[in-house]
Image (cartoon, rainbow, N blue to C red; front, side, top):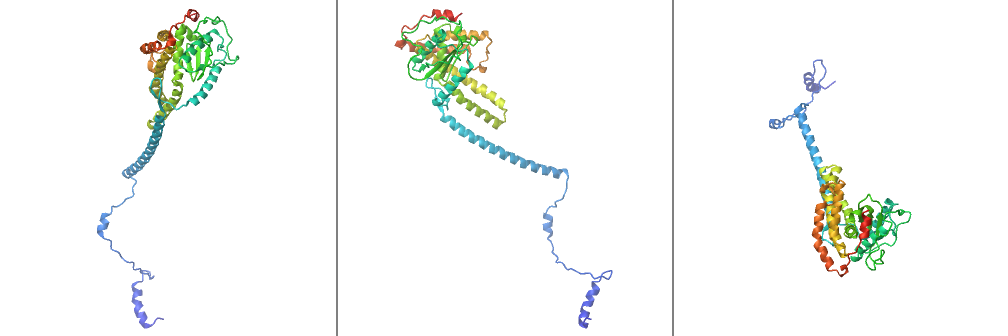
Length: 387
């Protein structure tokens, strides 16, 4: 089949490649590569193992990744906190102002125009709250309180009382509570509803002997009949009303409204940065910021109020005596003696502060020609007030 020359060439190859069973074996000649032994020795052997050292090494690697991730989150959070604090600080500084009467710096972001809206809303709430207890404007007690308020307002050009009165459906029916008019004396030419310009104030006299208080906010003055026995007479009542009107003059209600935003922002900041519970941050804010600020406002109202009553020719010493009587009443009725928990200063410190203001108050009266011979006789008022 094959030529003789070709057979002699392939026959030895077939015989050499025949297997044990006589089957042909195809020989494949792969190229051989010699690896350098130095490279083999320098490469560490990686063994597959589930032993604890290898597992521990893997766990440490995972924890470090988590630390890096949580660190990035904290860094981003701090950046946000710093940015918000910077913006808030700028807003705070821009809205700083001084109280004209005392020079104290405070944060205020409520405009007088907005105060007018708040005054009307507050007046409506007061009418609803004391419905049926408000004495009519022609009641003897109301007329007397009006005279004292008008003297304070007129002498300092603070405005006048509103000539309008609450609806009869809101006013309580007059009883025999001081039904006589013991207040026939007054300053010459004095009117209970003067026709003067400026700010318009509202006055409500609430017939509730159980409430020993008076207050004024956003131009609304409320006097409870329970405070009258403590006042004793016109001079003591002027000390109370001068203090309350001073709160409005200094815009303390708007200051508290503005400061509440700052207290809330600080509480949120403490909660975000330190993780404090909101209740704890609110307590810290109240004890360290709100209550001290409230006591500062009370001292300031005492200072301004003493000036107002002195300009209105009331006896400054009467304010000191009235607060001494009020302190005795509070002590008898179990008022707290812990000043840091009070919105008002302690009685002793407050009386001492008022006594320090008396020389300046008498100096104001001495320089005012209107205060010559203005000490009125109010024995009948004292008699009825002490019933």
